[in-house]
Image 1 (tube, rainbow, N blue to C red):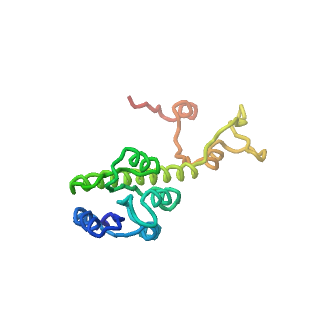
Image 2 (cartoon, helix red, strand yellow):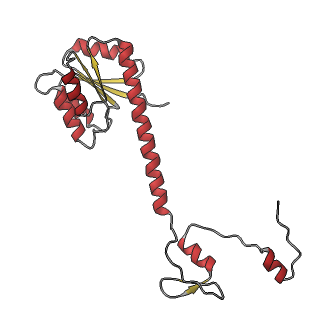
Image 3 (cartoon, rainbow, N blue to C red):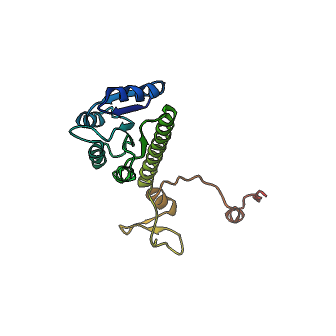
Length: 204
């Protein structure tokens, strides 16, 4: 069974935490913090949240400062932050987005709106992580591939290739040692005729 996404709800007012948690608890694991310091501590744990719902106005450390610290830390910068606040001035929203927030929900809010925004940003986060993992696997695979490049000295008569140490190798030996290619052997039509083999017809 897949683990449910973990949501960190940060608000200094317990009733606000209750309302948000009630809207989300059927689909997500909810953890809570009532101040900025606790929120930062929870965000840096090994079982860190997948998304943070963050109030702006809190004592001691406001939401904007919490968001700034989250985005400055390599361990937490990729966690989506959605501000949930009564501050609805355009300047407040601009500041939130400038600090790296993924979204901004104003109070009072409708639970379906919160659920929809959370679902959208979690899907974006998981898709991004999946893409990053695939890219990492691709780069790892490319690092393991040996590529032939540059000018290769090849004998005009016997077709042997001279390696970096000056030794002459059969072409299949050289390619085998410098790439991931493997060989099977057969007889081409020209050689078959020279060697007196029955005629080999190509496939149309």
